[in-house]
Length: 544
Image (cartoon, rainbow, N blue to C red):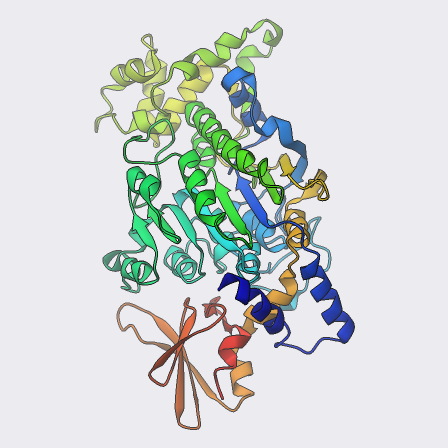
């Protein structure tokens, strides 16, 4: 089926408009010249250079696998502001266009920052085709892996479309109908009917679509499914240091299984892997969570590299979407004696920690009267000062309170509990000597442009094919169009077109329509961005 779909996709790319013969020849040549089958994009969310440097001191032999494939830097600014958010930053890497906070897979409404030349205000808020969607339509298998809920900003930006990252019910519903072969992470809360605003039972739908659905590490490792959907927590997975290894897989485990499943396809694959909670630890100024999740991420990188080094048609790209927290080795306490401070002073507490600040914070009792006991048990700190106890007790987020005390004792500074604007590291490996790794100082959207080229796809052409403003297109065919809530007190919308006595119903966020009573699937999704509904050309063609 995947092999056959390549021919179908090439033909369908040109149904929206009739390009010139030269344009057709150029696009066909681009597809024929594709020389990379497999692309793995790995995103250590929130990992800046300083955090990476700190974590390296804890790596085996003092070195990361990433160190061997470092090629440059990434400029992370949004389309309109210098400090990036995960949603627009991942959108840039997925679509080739910088965007705005909190946009997921859609064109920006505002621009002006470097990297936004050619901005077209008329396209504001429209969905944009992603690398994952393009890969799927060339016959490649596709997948997303994360330690957050899979509908969180970064994985969502590659697999869904909405101007708000907060529309989590919408984002995961779109993901389910993207025909991905692998979805691994957390987020089962967004699948259950009684927890969704629209009341839909998406868990049953996942199983009906042929996925092997599971919720434990053992089930993941044992699965023989060709399509797998693993949800290991309702909201988000635990930090690597805090997880129960018997039930919850590591990022390394999930990456290995994803590659195992996707690499069965002779046409190749496209995979996104996110080390999500590096960012969350940095938001909380928790150096233990930061370091241990970076270590866990690098183990996943090794899995990808091991595969690439034995498959001569694979490219790996690792790039953080932004830096979080602004961590530094050295703070005001070391400002006058930084050259005398031994390594042990920075590392001893973190190296011996048994839980992250989050994991330890979860064991504080309601009035936080057991702070001294918890800090001794998990961090070996048995001499807390009254000021430190007061800080942990009064800081609203206990993870942050604990993290800041450990940081102060470890001479680690933080500039923020939000995002900061520094460049992030670029790491790229190509197992094909004919394909040079991406290198230098690049904008985040140039990552998508690079992958677009090496995969032989055309994202702009695919956007034109997948996202056509529905109402004028259907009305031009003589249809009457309405946007209707069919869910009653649990809002759930359909685009409904009627023509010559026949009704065509397009449920939002799905890849099928009802033509009369017949259910018909099509190549794309019905997407509503709050202003307009969009349909792929294949859906519009259903209306006769």
